[in-house]
Structures are given as C-alpha cells and as structure tokens.
Image (cartoon, rainbow, N blue to C red; front, side):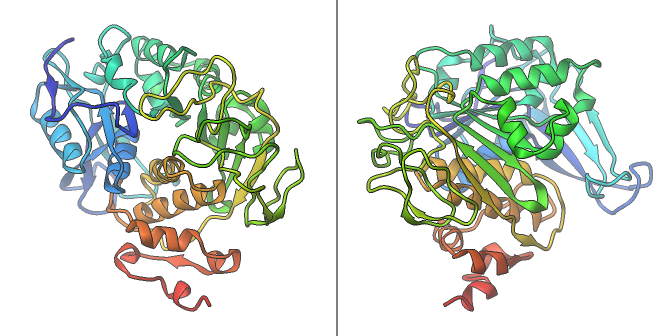
Length: 430
C-alpha cells in the first residue's frame, strides 16, 4: 500500500454496494463559452463510480467507495466531499508520489460539438491501482461490487485489476459493470472494444448505452446487444429518450431469496412490465405487460433465487449470485419508457440511472420498477447543474414508480421536482 487509509469508518459485511474507480476534482465554468474564454470556475467532484456511491448513500443505502488519491489538497477535498454524502471512504488510499486527477469542462451539453473537457489525469494516483495494492477484503465486503470500463482505460495495472475482480471465484459478490466507453482515455487501436466486451461478459449485471454499443462494438439494437452479452444475468440497455430495455434471466426455483431478501421464485415465473394474468412457464413478458407472476415469484436482476453452479455467496447477504446467466433460463424482456425532463445539465445521468437501478435491486423490486427508479434518479440529476444531487424521498420515488403506464407517460419533471410532495401529473392521476 502506498499510503494510509483515508476516512473514518471501515466497510463491513453489512455494506450494500462497494464502488471502485477514480474520482477527480472537477472545475465547473462560471458561464457558458469556450474554455479559453471562461474567466473562473467553481470546484466540484466527478467520477462515475463515486457518483454511484454518493447517490446510493443519499438514497439510504450503505455504500463504500474504494480508490486512490494523491496526498494533496485535491485528494483531501474528494475524500471529505464523498464522505459527506454518507459514503464509507475508509478503504481509500493516499499516494505520496502521484497527484489527484482533475478536469475542466464547459457548460455546454456533452452531446454537442462545442462541448470541451480538459483532463489532467495521466499518471494520477488512481491510475496506479493494481491487483497488488487494493484492499480485496474491502472490495468483497458488500453485496454488490460496482465497476466501470473507465477504470480499465486508466492503465495496464488498472485493467489487470478489473480482470481479477471480474474473474469467477467463490465468495465474489454480484458484479455490476457499467460499460462507460470513453474513447479518448484509451491508448489507440481497437483494444478498448474487445476489453470492454470481455469485462461485460464476465459480470453479473451490465449497464450499456445503445449508442456506445454501436460505437465500441458496431452492434445495433437492444436484442443484438443481449446476443453479444449472453452470460450476465441482467443486461440493461439504455436507449436515451426511448427509455431502457432490461434483459433478465435467472428466475429459477430454489430455497434462497433474491439479493434483496425477496420471496422464492416460482418455477417458470416471469416478471412483466405491468402486472396482470399468470405467465405460462417459459413465456417472455411483453412491453405493456398485463401478466402477473405466479404466486411467490420474485424479481430478477440481482442474482435471484438459487444460482448457477459455481456461484459464490454474496459478501453481505446469504443469497448466492449467478456468475453467468446463460444456463439460468430464458430472458424476461422489459421495456420502460423514459420520463420527460426539463434538462438543466446533461451530466451524471448515466451514473444516477445505475444508482437508481441498483437501489431498487437491493430492495427486491420488480424489474419494471428497477428501471423506473433508474429513470427517476437520472431525472433528479438532469434537473440540477452538477453530477450529484439529493434524490427524491424514497416514498415519493416509490409512489411515482408505481404509477400506471398512462400516468407514467404524463409525468414531466423539472427543476425542484424532488422537493415537491407530488408532481402535478401525479395529482391528476385517479
């Protein structure tokens, strides 16, 4: 280890989610315009994995962030700020020889040609993470270990670490992997595409954007993405304004509960988009739903019921999570439309979606509601200027996630909606 642990509390076996990755100090512009023209910047934090940890902690879960920072003021700011959200930072290591990464960005939407980001992260403390210097006992202490493809791009040592963490082994927690394809971070060639596909296929729960799958792998469409990722128990394809499509397998009978301690799954049961009559064994659900799961059926998506042979127990729960979903039965396919949102800044939405989905997974909610909670958490971030914000209260989010399809389609969320008791569209819903 390069330095002493930072933070105050240690991760325990009761941790819900452990997130590993680089967090950086981000400098946000005081006004729109080119970086060359912006006169001053405000300081914030940024990092896909720490964003997920902060959102989960703010939503009431026990989250830990594992990373490396420099022995400098920026590293101190990161650790203090992330811990301020309620995240366990005890496993963060300080590196006396390498700096904390920083970056500057413009106020323009990341999806436009005028958006600029200037990274100063080469040789950062986080890029020195390797299988030899991370605390495995802390990484495996949670029920879920959340990773992303960004870490794999930082260095050869970081890639080796992710390969170690995604390897099938007894005792491995459920591995959540956000592809997060960032072409500018890779060192040229097509290595990034093959590496990201490899890591995704070794994971249990995968988040991938339809656009990034096309860019990285040349794969078009949600069904084709699932075909390229047959092993994960759950694949969440984010489709922008079209919503999200979730492919979930692993509904198998067995004495063990789902990751969230839910009910035993009935043989052949499949969850649906909207509830309704009982599904026939082996049937797929449809987008509009209507079919009800067999009595006692639990949701998929967290390494449900009893898992494939060779799967190890989770670190905190007693439920086993499947390392591969290929042998777990046919998929449930659930499409959940996106919400209409008055966007303030299109930053951090993907991380927030992952946090919302993981939060609902930990709680054992149905697949549809997991995706809806992802959309709601993303909407909270989209309606503020930065990457992080206070999520809606749990009962508020649960109430919105439970709306019928028509009421869900009428929702329109703008700045301040998380502080409102009810959205106007919800009030009009019978």
